[in-house]
Image 1: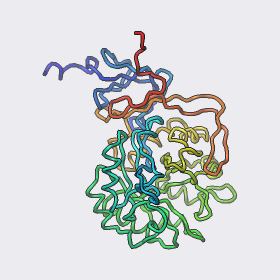
Image 2: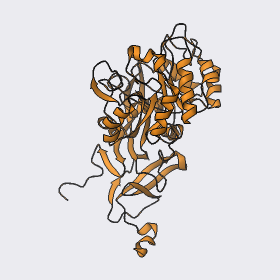
Image 3: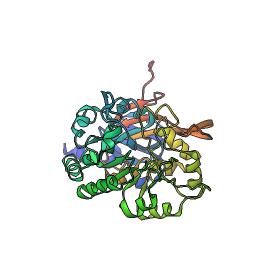
Length: 402
């Protein structure tokens, strides 16, 4: 036993070795061709020319290798109850059928469950998914049940919400406030109060009243550094857009980002417009995190999946390194899960391998408007906890006749 413990790294036996891929690991400032060795469920070595020995070899030449993607705005509290919207209802999605094929290994359900319903969500989805499922707990006790339930301020209890967060620190990473259509600030303020008690960030799906409340006040007076403004590039009558009618980014948006407000994409079925995103990026503003707002109303529309949303930002001018960071290490930091989003030795073996296809592609926003692009991410293989869970072209598989 002692001899095996003292064997040098180059002489170890590995479960999987990923060979020859272009590694992008933002935490460790790696942006070059490197091999990655996995032993069981852990990353054990990142280096040039690792001796694979008896390991399962994955040939990643010509492909990119990154930590598994983290989608911090998804809806996975799937159930069979009618009129429950995204909280134990039919419009949320069971994660495993939709994550791995786009390189996602971790999702954060954005408010489907509240403190009254989280135990059901945990039993039905979190405990039975191969995807790592985390949660922003809704400030509404009933969760994202839709309609009048989400307007009920008497069900927005900061103390009870914070208490349930404290009971489930491994799964709950923040608080969510969404879909409130009144002129009051109370839902946001109660969510922030719960966030202060539990020491977790708040994600805000903001707007819903006419005239709209001030997003400048939201950023500067109500949210804390580290809190998250999702649906950054939405253009709705009930919310002030970050880009004004003349195509100019409002200056306080940049100030808010410098202050520490996190700007999340949250594409969804109705919350992403090229008329917002393209002028914003041209002005030098880029989102902190890229996410999908995955549900039945977005997956077959312009959103499609994480890799498609990432491809939009690649074609709008973000570099592949920026896009990868906004889908791995940055969201890991935002949700205070620094154990995720990187490929350091000792980290969990969650890996995405993808190519960038060149050609003529069309991308559609949530209002049906199109943008042409010449590059598109395509997930080749996903590893979760050291196991290959998706392999598009069999790059991890032996040939049948050998």
